[in-house]
Structure formats: C-alpha cells, structure tokens
Image (cartoon, rainbow, N blue to C red; front, side):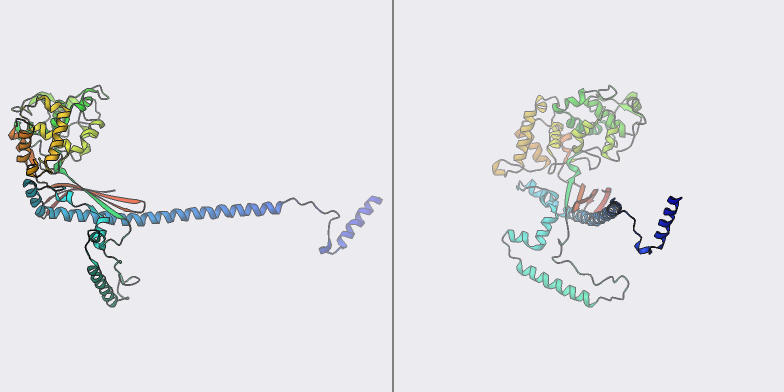
Amino acid sequence: MTHRKNNQNLFWRRLLVPSGSRVGSRRSQPTGVALLSVMMGLALMSSVVTDMSYNEMVRYKLAIYERDSVKAESLAHSGNNIARLLLAAQGAIQPMLTQLAAAQVPLPAHTLWQLIPLESDLLKGMTTGALQSTFGMDVSEALANRAETMAEARAEIADNFDPDADGAGLGPFEPPEGGFGAFDGGFGVEIQDEESKVSLRGWANQLTPAARYAYGQRLFGLFQPEKYDFLFLERDNWGNRVTRQELVAHIYDYIDSDEEATEPSADMAQWGRMNSGSEDGNYTSYEGIEPKNAYFDTLQELRLVHGISDAHMLAFGDSLTIYGEGKINLLSANNRALEMLVRLCAMDLSDPSLQDPQWMGETLSLWDEYRYLTPDEGGGPLSPTGFKSFLQDGRFMELNNELCDNTMTTESKNFSVRSTGTVGDVSRTITMVLRVHGAAEEIYFYNLE
C-alpha cells in the first residue's frame, strides 16, 4: 500500500514540473543515430548528383559527337566535290600528260589524279601562302589585298543586313578569317583508277569465242603465279578443289545468260562452249546460292561464285573490278596487273620464264626503270607500243599482238573516289564510283559511312 502511494506521489510531482524542465533522472547515452542519418543523406545526395553529372556528360559528349559528325560529313563532301572537279578537268589535261609519257618525258606520275594530292592541309597551305613561301615566293601583297577585300565584303554584308527579315538569326553572316581552310579538322581524298585493274565488265557480252577467251586469259594470268598454288590445292569446306581454269569458267558461268556449264579447257577457237552440264551442279552444296546469270552488283558478290574463298578475295580482290572499259591503263596499272599483261602478251603461254618469279620480278623492275628514263638513258614511250617494244627488245619475248593490243590503253574514264573528313575523334567517309568523260559524269555507286 505504501509502495503504491509513493508511485502516485512521484507521478503527480512529475506532472507538476514545467514541461521545459522535465528531465529524466538519468542522462541517456549517445547512440550516433543523427550522424548516421546525416551520412546517409549525404551519400544519397552524392549518388543523385553523380548520376545527374554522368547523364549530362553523356549528353554533352553526344552533342559534341553529333556536331563533329556534321562537320566531318561536310568536309568529306568538300573533298569529294574537289575530286570530281579534278576528274572533270582531267579530260582536257590528261591527253597532254599522255603525250609527255609517249614522248618519254620523265614525270613523278603521268596521270592527273596521281600528280595532284587532294589533302586539306596542302590546300590550306596554298590559301594561306605558307606553301608559296616555302618555295621562296613573296605573296604578302596578295594576302594583304585579300584581307582588304574580305573586310570590304564584311562591311557590305553588315550594311545590308536586315534584322527584321525572316531567317535573319542573331546577326549578319561573317566569313571566317583566313578564307578557305579556316575550319576545324581536315579531309583527305584517295582517287583510284578502275582501269588499272582487271575488269569483269563486258565479259558475258562478248559474242565470239576468241573474245571470251581473251577475257578469261586476263583472269588466268592474274591467278597463274606459282605463289598462289596453295589456293588451288586446298579443299573447301565441302571437300571441293577448283583449278585455275575451272575457277575462270565458274566466274563466267555465274554472269553469262545461259544455264549450261562452260568447258574450262576449251581452246581459243571454242572457249565458252557448253560441256552439256548444268551450272547449278556446282552449287548443290550451297544452300540458296545459284548462278546469277547477270553482272555483279558489287565486287563482294564474287564470294558467291563456286571456288572463291576469303583467301582468294584477299589475294586478288584489289586487282579486280566490276567497272571499267575493259582495258588496263599502262600509266596507272599496279605490278599485279602489269604481271598479268606480260603473261597475256606472250605468244607461248607455256614459256617457263613466265612461271619464274625471279624473271618476272626483274621484268617489272626493269619496266619501272624504263618508264622514268629519258631516251638517252635507255627509256621509251609509255604507251602500248612502248610496252610491246620493251617486252620484245628488252625481254626477248615473242608477242601475241592481237591479245596485247586489245588489253592495253593509256586512258581512264572510271574512278573510285574515297573522301574522308575528320574532326576531333570523328571521321565520315564518302565512297563513290563514277564514270567521267569530258563534262559528262555518271555515278555508279555512292555510300556514306
């Protein structure tokens, strides 16, 4: 009873104590809950800020990439347009270079597209005067006149600017200081002559066996070197082995208009004759693949031909083309095409010298010297006649003049143009294949990547 009264008295005493003075009889020990709450709040805020910062950085990087991508694409278009301008001019200038080549005048190159490199840095040097100054030319007066003209143009644009007109923007257009070349990044252009390669175009349209045979011999001459024997000795994934002659016939069968297989070993008088078999018989192991009986749309379509592997494309792809006029330009042909021409021009295709890598390498080396020597030094004209004379007199070959004459030229009309614009870490490339003849231009292929 006494204990209950004491508890009641203690309760009433606590109630009578002012609220601001109510303190427990014992001080509670610190537990760190407040500190933990603060740390958790700071960590949460830090993660939110970090996430926002990362997202904004990604957006910023994407914006920079898109900006530089547009600039790079514009530079690629600029390089492509300059290349097309050069090729349009080559119709008037190239004949003069061809005459110099025939007159045995040594030059670094005898084709316009090889003589003039299309690089933005070089063009910048020309517009800023740095290139001229390198050769000791004083262009300071011309640069001063250009700066004065630009200043007058800016003043005229500013005077005629109407801020209330549609599309006025933030102000009048101001041409960049320095004229051409005052841009970020740069571009480079590579022009490749399609006439410097062995063309597959026009083969199926040849009406006579001799004409079809001549086209086939170009491919056979390309495949013939002994160093490529392994390509024709190994079996493919289906256990098939294809010889050089068979591969030439398979390529022809893929693009010709009939469905009969061609006899690979037929001679010149009968090449292209049927051997009473079906073209489809070579493709029974290939699911969904059969001869197209039409021309190739791209060079990569060669991979669908029976007997062609990735190794074949690596070995011969850069020497083949689906464009061109059918003849090889001696002024721009690479060593592999020249080696094919040497074999094609030989009257005796079984001549052991044609299979001797040392003899062939020496022949190409001597021709390379021949083309850069003056007449007094033992050089000769860079023309089909000069090439035949070199083989007859310099290499003592008996020639098949008909095959030789119908395979060589010193003119080119088909070109591949690859223009790459680069700004920062971004590059855009335009690839175009076109035929240029005088002022006329026909585009066969266009790709932007």
